[in-house]
Each structure stands twice: as C-alpha cells, then as structure tokens.
Length: 305
Image (cartoon, rainbow, N blue to C red; front, top):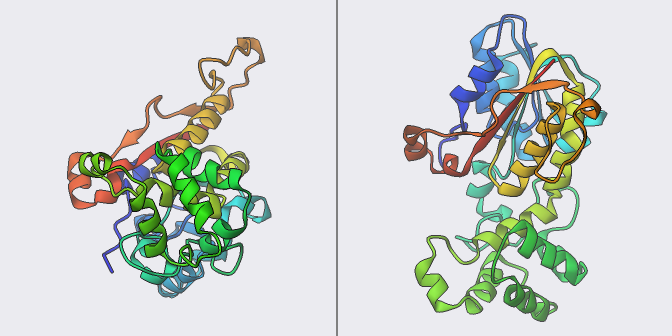
C-alpha cells in the first residue's frame, strides 16, 4: 500500500490559516493527512472528522489517542451532514472522490487494474455493491452513470454489453466488467488514449453507486451554515461534474451569476460570501510529480461574510 499523501495540503492550510483555539471539520477523513496537519499547527486546535468508510475509523484510532481530547471521529457520510449537531467551525474541508486507501485495497473493487469482486461501495455496510447495482437498476440509470457521470464517448456500446451480460456472472468481478468494456472499445481508441478504456465507466459507476454528486449538493449549503462568520469552506474535487456543483453553489453564495444563462437581477442576488479566486487552485508541478493523484485536483475556497 502506498504512503498516503494529502492533496493540496499547503494550499488548504493557507486558506484556513489555522489559529490557536480554532475548530475545524474534515468531512472526508480518509487517511487523516489534512486532519493531522491542522492538529499539528497548534495544540489548542480541535478537529471533528467524518468518514463513511469503516476502515477510515480504524485508521483514525491511533490519532484519537495521539490527539486525545482534540480529535473526534464521527462514522458518517457527509451527505447526511444535517445530522451533525456541532457547528461554528472556523474551517470545513471536503476532499472528494475515492481515497488512495480505497483504490489500493484490491478486494474493495474500486480499481480495474486487479481482479476482485465488483463492489465499489465507500461504506460496504449499506447500499448495493456495483455488481448488484448493474444487475438490477433500470437501463437509464446505467446510461446516466456511464454517459453522464463517466463522460464516456463510447457509452452506447458499453451500456449494451453490460445489459446483455446480466445474469451471466460476467458482472460479478472487476476483470469481468473490464473484459466487456475492452471488447467493445475500438482498437484505434485503445492505441490513441492515455487512459485505460475502462477508466471513465468505472468512475461513472462508482459515482452512481455511492450517490456522490447528490451528497456534495446536499452537504455544501449545510456546511456553509455550520461556519462561523469569517469561516472558510474548502473543496477539493477530481471530476468536472463535482467541480461544476461546487463552482455554481459558491458563485450563488458570493452573489454572482451561477453560469452564462443566469439572468437574476443584481438587486435579487444576496452576497453571503467571498470566493478566494474565480478560478480553481491546481497542484504545482512538484506536487504533481510526487503525487500523480493531484494532477486532476481542483480546489475552490469560500469565506463566509
């Protein structure tokens, strides 16, 4: 298993500017890299960390004793953030997508590089495994996952072979799904693409199985309400659809048009926040070379007025 490297760590700390007595919410504990960096800034800083992955709770156990009284861990999907009673945070962080730990554990079924049961659930205790999801949902949901969430150009052929494979046992494993996708990917696409032909479909199915876009849409307004005045929310995304949701919600809170088609008159806009920048922050060349996962990372930050 690779060493966990938190993405855009310096940039997150710069936005939060953690001060003595600060209180922060890490909505995606993962490997705890961002949480640790905050706690190490000052021995009076407190962090509440959430994660829906039961294995994240195991990883947190050592830090809970190391930072006794300053770190609390809540077994929770941030999509249900309204259920967290705590509020008045100085900073709230979302580091979206799948963690390196989840990708590295073969049996979780997130990666197409090794054969494993096709699961993909961030919380294996609830919902349908990807194999069962592909076998049982309406065809339109698979179209939505592969075409819209995966942004896969060859979606028609891929959806067709998935539907044809129902009941055959071919959808039970990652290798089975990869083989189906490879069989309908044109040779010229395989030759010309930098990415494996299953990359986009796996991503789209994972997003659908975990209801990831709905979770971030629901959580952002609640997170904003849980900030102190002057508090900052930082979101790191790895997918254009996630970033679009964040960008639109941040622009609305900052009293700006959410997109080119937004014709709301200025007097009806309410400015509740200030964006740190109009453009997302990207990882520098050094970070990208040390941590390939950071190449697709985009961070947006917003300060509550």
